[in-house]
Every structure is written in C-alpha cells, then in structure tokens.
Image 1 (cartoon, rainbow, N blue to C red):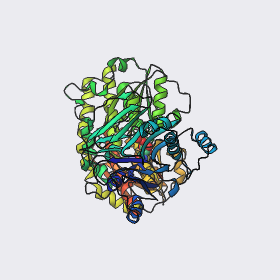
Image 2: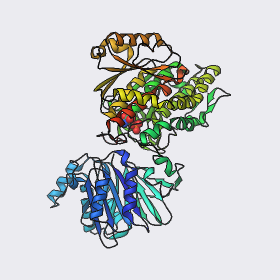
Image 3: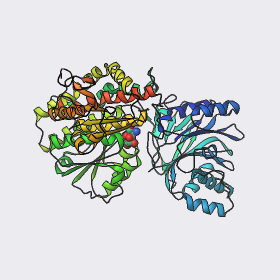
Image 4: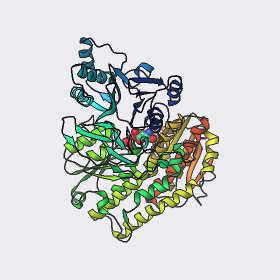
Length: 610
Ligand code: M6R
C-alpha cells in the first residue's frame, strides 16, 4: 500500500521516478505525485487516478531537476483527491509517506493551536509541518530536522523528505513500513520495494525499523533515530529487471501463473535430499530440539497465504502427527491467544509485511513460542521478527492476485512437514522419499497442466457472464476450493464461494439451480467416491458442474458440463496441480470481462494497515 521512490544523481529525476512508481503499481493506489528539486526550488505535481494522469499533468507542467521523490497513494486518511495526494509540502520541505501516523489527531490539534493551516486531510502533512517547524526553530540540517520530527511521531511509516535548502540530498526513515535504498553508479535511489530499483542497480541496503538515512549521489549515511551510526554493506539482489517485467504476457498475473513450475523448482533447489529421504536441515533454520519438543504447530496467515496454511495443517498432521491449528492472523491479534514454549508458530506471508500477520507473530513470540516465517521477500518484516525464515523463491510477484507465491508456499510447507516428521520419528525414510519425490516431480506436472490453458479459456468463455460461482473440494481440495473462489472474486468481481464439499448439504446446496456453475475439485484421490457423490447431488438439482478431474476418469465425464483435466498425481502434491486450472479460470474470466487484472479495484498487494 502506497509506494515511495526517490532519486538523487546526475540524470533527470522525473522520468526515473515515474518508472519506479510504475514498478510499484502492484501495491495498489488511487493517486500519485512527484516533487523535484531544480537546484533552486522544489516543484510538485500530483494527480488523482492512474500514473497516466500524472504523466499528462507533467506534460503540461514539466519538472526539471535531478533530485526528487515520488509517491503512489492508497487512501487511509482523507479521500483520494488531488489535495490529499503526496508529496505534501510545508515551508521549504516536501514529504512522501507510507503508513499511518497513529498520534496524528493530537499532533494536528497542537499544530493548529500554534497557527499552522493544513491544506490536506492527511496524517502525512503533519510530518511535513513538524520538519518545517524544526527548521524554522533553527535546526538547519535536514537530517537533524527530520529526526526532531520523528521524535514526536508514533506509528508505522516510511518517509522520504526533500528540502529547498538541501538541493543535494534526500532524507529517508522507516518504522514498520518497508524502505529499500539502491546504490547506483554515482547515483542513489530509494523505493518501497526492490522492483522499483532494479532497472538501475541490484545493490541494495534494506533500512531497519527505527533507522534513517541521508542519500546523496555518491554516499549514504545511516543512523538510528536515536543518533547511533549504522554501518551496513549493500546486498546484491539476484532478481533481473526482466523478472519484474511482463515478459511478453498480456498481464503480470498470467506471466506469474506460467512461472510457477520454475518458481517451485527454485524454492526446492538445494533443500531436498532424495538419497537420505530428508529436507536439508539448515534450510529450515530451526534446531532439531525445537522439532522434537513442540506440542503444537500454530499457522498464522491472511488471504491466499491462509489457504496455503490449510494445506500445511493437513501435511503436518499427516506426516508429523502434531496437533496443528490454522488461524487468520487478523483475528488472532484481537483475541487473547494462548501461546507458549510448546508452540511452533509458522507465519506465512508472500510480502512478509502484512501488518496483521506481523502483529500476531509478535504476540506469539511474547508468549514464548518459536516462530518460523515463510515469506517471499528477503529481510521483510515478518522474517525479521521470527526465529527462523524459510524463503520461497518465487521472484517478484507483481499481480495483486497471488499465484506463484501460493504454490511456492505450498512447496515450502510440504518441505517443513517432512522436516518435522523426520525429526519427530513419525515419518520413515522411505515415505519421506516418496513425498519428496512427488514434490520434485510437481513442476513437470504443472507444466503439463499449463499447456492445457486453451481448454480453460474455452470454459471461461462459457461462464464469464455468471453472477455467482461455487467451488467445492474435500481434503487437500478444500483449500483449493477456497483459493479458487478468492481468485475469481478478486479479479473478476464475480461473487464466488468456496466450501468443503462435505458442507454442501449444510447450506450451499440451496443455491444450486441451472444458472449456478459449480467448480468441483474431484481428482482421483482417497476422497474421490465422496466428492463425486457431491457432483451427482449438484447434477440432480440442475447445477452446472465444471469438474477438475484426473486424466482417464471417465465416470465424471457424463456428469459435468465441462471437465478440466490434470495428470495422475501423488496425493501429497495434488493442491499444487489442482490450483492451476482455478487460477487460469479466474484469469481468463476476468480478462474476458475486461477488468484491471493486475490491479483489481480496492485491493492492495501489501497490506500494511489494519
Ligand atoms: O503478503 P501476504 O501473503 O501476507 O498477503 C496476504 C493477503 O493479503 C493476500 O494473500 C491477498 O489475499 C491476495 N490479494 C491474494 O491474491
């Protein structure tokens, strides 16, 4: 949510900032703006809506200069109108901000009582005024003035600040919201996420909570807000700029769907020891003692990641025979959950920044639990708050609707369950080898399913005008029913519900009539007889079945209106395969409807506010 970019160097800042903001569009936004220093003064241009509108405004009012900051805003305080768009100015200073200033009401009242007049409804403008006042009070150095302001601010923020009086530097600071610094050749950049920088550098410094930095063309100075100098060498990122581009696909989401076999291979690489029938222990990052001593696995996640944890629970119970609980993180943080040293919490988040998951992780650690994070973004907040991190290697996921992060999360969760089962003695070498072998074979099976995308497109053509859709699944098909429904509603805006197939009789069956498409995940697995019984029940009520079924299953053919086929697959890895037709179905339906597939309305990629 909200994207920040900044540039200081020899090149014209404006096009670079726009290009960086474009790479952050996936975060979701409703307005955008730039502030550029031309050596004498700072000029600001802002526009409501997509970046194109900002480019139109810039064409009418070009911003010259080689130092600037930019922002995409996702409204929290104040409507998405131009005067609330960032950057916000006060005196000589301009500020962009991601996050929420929690004590904004008190600060605003104090500033207003002091004669300050606000020109926006945002919490961000408060920060600009606090810095301006510090400078007016005699703190001439921008870095010191920003520090003075931050001492008064509570909440989550990443900010970038420029001042007319400091034509050679940007000051940035971070608490909870992400901020990355890019080190280029004689130029320095910053952004909310790595893709914003990749076109210019792969050498990055990730700012930590409570730190601030002064960026100049050839140098970076980092200190804590409390004034302690920080020395941190840049890290080299191995994502190529192309990995963050569409690569010839119409949408990022489609590209990411097709990247899944590669993403899973990357996630498994170096972690599977087929000879020993085990997972490379150092990759999990927890001691064997943790594995043997815990009495409960407690999964925490939101949205699609939560659906992955439902499969994780299944695997942990089956392979490691440990009681496992799955919770939506946004609910956990408002109960009084009982965590203790017997718990191993597994927090799953593609972004690694989801505020609810982060808060629940902190609560778990306060209760004495050990925490393993499964995340896709290196050094993001949740892995840093955890005891250990198992990274998925999906590469940057730009489409707001998560696809390759989901399947790599499934891969990581199955690795984790095998690791746990092996250490607890509930999983022998032979069975572990069979599970791992299935996992290693999954990318090839995924490729085979993706080759059948045109068949999914044909089904999408039939159903893209539906107003509702039901998804049913059982066992490891249940999380996929939930995920299939979520994907469809996120990007096509069709109302969709996912249900455990066994629950159909307890309510959703009332919805079924000849206008209701029902997607049933009914592969040849241990639950096949029961799930195909549900298919019969749907047919008996004139429901229209789209079956996701195994090659060679001819019993299903006469019952379903359409059948989307998958190859025969080991039961353990079924969700990695059955989810693919549901992702493609959602994608093609949304594309046929002409929705904004990569940036669906109202959604944000990284949910850093409650
Ligand atoms: O970054 P996270 O995995 O923690 O995000 C959790 C959800 O916000 C996310 O999965 C959301 O549901 C996506 N839009 C799913 O496509």
